Image (cartoon, rainbow, N blue to C red; front, top):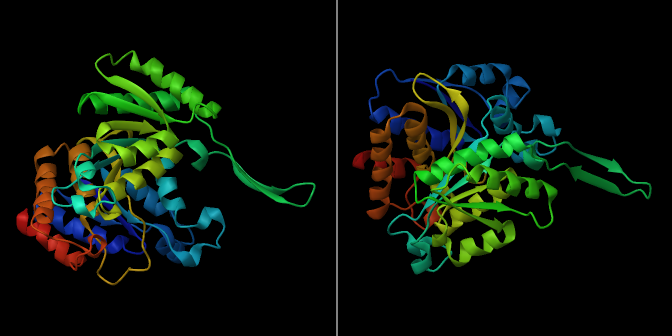
Length: 352
């Protein structure tokens, strides 16, 4: 079981270190961990946010456990050298096109949500975000118009094959949940979204047991606040998925609670190769202060055991330990408590 650890910047090393402690506590046979540089840390050491040796390390691993990238001191660098290019590069180079982001209300945290408790407690959804297309990877640039104004542009595009493969992932995921799938687009104004909707409808014919509905992204954002319990599985494009999943995190109380899995089509001897990371950023303002919530990183490790190593029992053990720690009152600074990074991880380990 070869796991590449890319801790990255800011709070990345802190939260990833606690996730590794949890993995080590399971005493998994054949577990091999090795570390690589990404983000601003990699740029300073190697001159690039995703060095060739890091990419090679990822390709030789069975899974990647990722921390976070981002550093304000790098904001003026050319775009190709900014820390965020590390995770975008890994997704592209490794063919990781499907991002799974579960959002579930933990018992006892209803009052931490920005929503009313009786609404928040119904949240149990999975957002499936396409990762390799859309404006993030389309052609982009700036130029000067004839009147002297500068204009920036980004190309949004999807091919039928890109939409079809993420749609299959979403329908299969919905089959394993409540057999309800919501496809989110903006087909009323975007041709890219119209193509998206057309292809999702075609793929739906292969999954007659799944109920499919379509929502425009603005309505979906409103409905997630008004009645999040109506959603089970959501599939959407790269840009909309980025926004909606962050919105979902605040509906459950904190972005420090949400894990993610980025999967592709590569199979290893153990399961599906994937990159696993908390959805929060590098949070440089609290880096090094021991205040970061490690639970999203720990839950990302659980997702890794489930998808890349077919270790459902150990994945559930971690998830139940996190649930119990929260139910017993463990609260980090992001939830109005005073428990630090190590203390929160200790609470999980004691229940594991």
